[in-house]
Image (cartoon, rainbow, N blue to C red; front, side, top):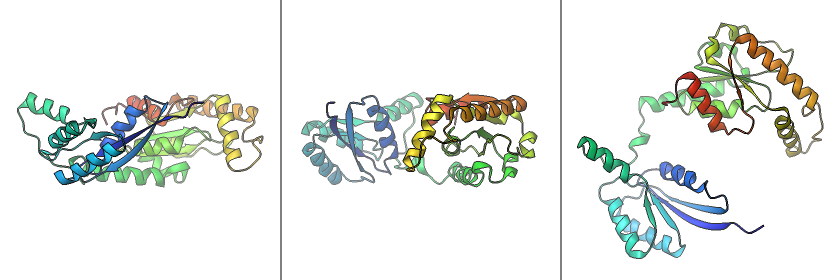
Length: 272
């Protein structure tokens, strides 16, 4: 197998640089044969610093991606990079200019405006705390205050999906489904539209559970990974979902983001 091609990427921002990082990651995901090496340079506020970073990019034959909004800095970086023969991609200015032109408005040029400690920010923190507090059915009373409840047998990604949704300001509680286990009465008091039943394919679950046992240094062939046991668990969970009349999503071969998007669409919250 050929070694992956390495590509250095200098991510430059006048704030924390998270936007530049996420957008660059999304682009690089299209090239699995390339190994990206990210170097982040947040809180860049001077032309002198930009000159220094262009030299670094030149030495490493790097591509620059940047989200500078401080007035004059983005233009300066683009010009200096072009003069030095460095590829620099402005990820944010085209959008700002288009909105400015359409509404004849001037942008604030305020770095980090996305990360203000607004009411929405504190709502997100509260949702994250809620997800942790009511993870794995720790306290069924949380079901009554949740925006959505995730149900599923072991290894159906309940917790990571809960945290992903919490980052969208959604209050999530989740409950592991175990055959013959007591189902909390609070669950039956919740609107079924707010309940999501997660399921999976037996073979996929078998592989996941076996790998989990191997990672712990244990025998992979146990009741936990036994195919008949898995099928019984899935059947028990499906019977509960049918009884509740809740929406069911199969997470097999779906990323956390894909499953979360389906949940948001079901809840009518895809605008978050």
